[in-house]
Structure formats: structure tokens, C-alpha cells
Length: 294
Image (cartoon, rainbow, N blue to C red):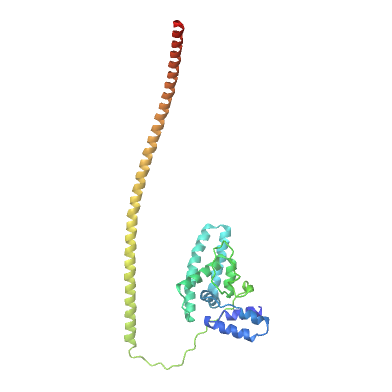
């Protein structure tokens, strides 16, 4: 491991607020060397990138599971295995959603609230790691400075997405979760503990009942929508049946008209022949008469 990678590995595992002062202190420590300039140039990660970096260090096994599913997904795509591809795609969506939820919890434990927008960027980064092998390597490095996005078709430019150029191929050092020290306090029984517990339980029950009522109202709305759509489907089907019946009638009528047209054309040909014959006979008669008179 290069000295810069070692320093970056330490810095990007820190709390987001601690990054800049720690980086500047290390740059000052290496003043007068090329390393000082390199350290000073390290950029602070975006919130989404920081969440992923923390996740890689503290939930390493889950991140490796994400990358393993991604590798299997890419192999299924290469093998054109449709059934396996559909199953892995479902697993990918479920897994990225679950890991994103876990990431929000990890960030919250470190005093950082993850907004919906940031959560979407985290999920997009995890998805990119699954569909693109190089994005997966960038995530595994734990040195992201920006969120990632990939379609699996076009190559992703990772030059500005990782802290150092040789981050790809590097794996962040896992961190053990340290449990906070518990103060040695003398426990004093609370005489109102039962009442407080009952009140808390009643509050939870009230909230649960509100959720049930809301869910029931939502269900009723969906059921009404389903019935309306079923009625509309029957109406559209009836209209389609009527159009098909009318089309069949028009096709039959078209065939009959074609037959009549053919007969009419034959009659026209016969009439044209008769006209031509009568014209010739008239012309012959006129010629004979002219000859007699002359």
C-alpha cells in the first residue's frame, strides 16, 4: 500500500465533519514533501459518497454480497440466461433497497441524517457497483468522493469519482464497531415506571390503530379503483367485440362488391365489343349507300 493510499484509507473512514481538519493536519505533518501536496489535494466526499465509504468499512460483508450479486448478474447477461437474469434483477433491487436502509441507519448512528435525495444517490451508487465491474471496484475502495451512476452499457468515467487514481483494486480497511462506554451509575427504581410503560404502550397502540385506519382507507381506495378498471375493461372489450363484428361485416361486403365489380367489368367489355361491331356495320352501310348514289 502506498503512503497516499494508507492516509486516504484513514481519512475517508472518519466522520464527515472531521475530514478537513484531519487532512490539513496530515498535510502540515508532511510539509516539504510531495506527499504533502497530494494529501492537501484530497477532496472531501459528498454526503452520499461518505455514507457508502462508511458502509464499506462497517458493513463489509453486506457490501461484498452486493458485489457478488452484481458479478452473477453480469455473468447472466453475458450468458443470456433470461430466467436467471430476471431472478438476479429482482434480488438486486431488493438488496440495494435493504442495504440503502442499513446505510441510513449507519449514518444516523454517526450523527448524519440522510435525506431522501442522498438515499437515492446511495442506492444509485450501489446499483452502479452491481452493473459495472469498475464501479464495484471504486465502491470497494472506500475512497469515493462522489456518488456513482451506471447503466451497464456505457463506460463510467471514474477519474473524478475516487480520491486517488490508483483506488481501483484497493479495498478499504474494515472497521470494528466500538460500543460506547456505559457509565457506572446506580440504578434508582422509578415509582412511575409501570404508568410510564402503560402510557407508552397506549401511545404505540394509538399510532398502530391510526396506521391500520390509514391502510384500510388506502385499501378501500385501491379496491374501488380496481372495480372501476374492471368495469372499464369490460366496456372496452365489448366495444372491441363490436368493432371486430363490424369489421367482419365490412370484409364480407367488400368481397361482394369485388364480385359485382368483376361482373360489371365483364359487361362493360361485352358492351364495348358490341358498340365496335355496330359501328363497323354502320360505316359499311353508309359506304354502300354513298356508292349507289354516286
